[in-house]
Image 1: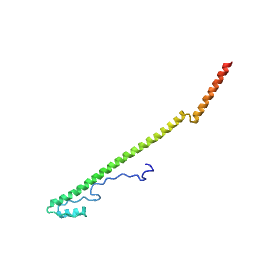
Image 2: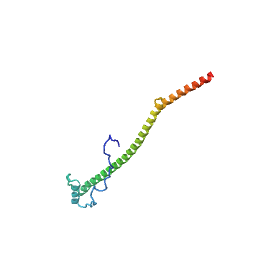
Image 3: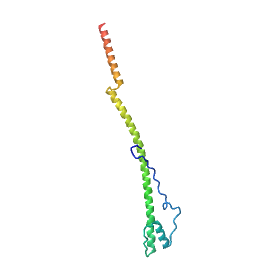
Image 4: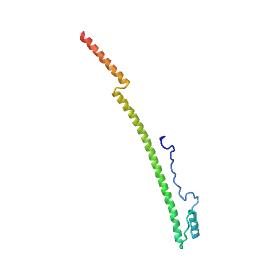
Amino acid sequence: MSSKGRGRVPSKLVPIEDGAGGQNSKPRKIFAKKDLIEAVRKIAPNKPVVKTGSGSMARSASVPESNQLTIMETGVNLNARRYNDLKITADRKAVELKKRLDTLACLKMENDALSDMKAKKTPESNRIEELTDEIKKANQETENKLHYR
């Protein structure tokens, strides 16, 4: 990368591992309402637990929490993969751009050199011009000598 941009090169993002983000054991199945309420408190300790009359409502309230977590993990992993793919593509294009800029610089130097030669501004073209003048003078002298013999 250029020295004008940011000095730090971003590294690849690592997808979040499957599971509940760092828990090393599988969650146990919950069969009692009391266990379900305790599990909800552990997941979201700041949220107040709403007590309802039916047990099915409490069970359905925890499903969206885990569902939301898996959805967010999937979204983060997808965006991390997309970022890594775009970064690789950008790096490839940067290398290709650098090659083409080098080629462009070489072509500009060649074009400038050819323009100078065409305009007779180079020392070699000046020397060639002097030599052609000397040749013309020498040819003129020889023609004059042959003409007067």
